[in-house]
Amino acid sequence: MILGLRVVAAVLIGTDSQVKVFFSFEKKAKFTDVKALVFLVVANGLAAGYSFIQGFRCVVSLVRGSILFNKPLAWAIFSAD
Image: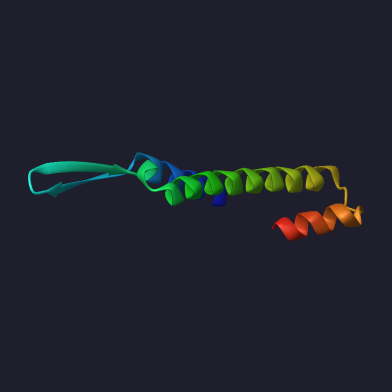
């Protein structure tokens, strides 16, 4: 569900635009005009990808019945979450 919401948010930000009329000029603004929004879309995509990978890893661990015994890897995953 998180992955789906993140993808929807990225699509909405990427396809949205606004038109502002200033006297007789029209200025069309997109998310690429504001560099912070470009960063937001990229960061949102990376977070969605990470969530997908972690979800897939958890499902594989459940199916195989394995437990994570590697302490450094467990701390790395915990820190990234």
